[in-house]
Length: 214
Image (tube, rainbow, N blue to C red):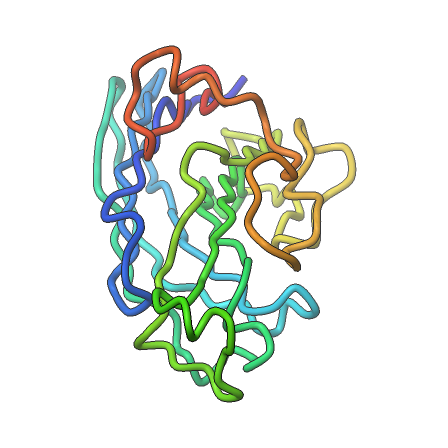
């Protein structure tokens, strides 16, 4: 049984300029005291073709964690543009939030991102070399993909999940992103969970509690 449940994630400052920091407000509940730290990572997927272009934007440690409800803002600088292939700079990509305990990843929340030029003329005729300072980053906040992994909460046995493309057989409780990041951002075409935020009156940059529970 999982000892940590993510109950909500709010994407702050969205849409935003490409060079603005990523900001996520995370709410989670701990059903019993954890004596060691939770390790949170924010990962930017630089290319759908290879994990070599993934960038860990930041890693933070939270703990020891007492029983109860906790809220914090996870902020990280934008990716290093020199490590993003030019052909993947504009268009759709993914940002991942992961959490591990004792070296075992137990939850991953993925969001699609659309990077596009704010200027209509640049959208119609994009320059051959990406102009990152003119890009707008729009995170599809209401359509996260949550993947949960079964772990051993009482020792440091690894569950084998190391990246967005390498998952341990038998430990995954829900499919990962599972679709290409190529093409254009279209909410109706993404294979995502049903969004209940509108009926619940939740901010459009916040995920519903039922969707985020893990």
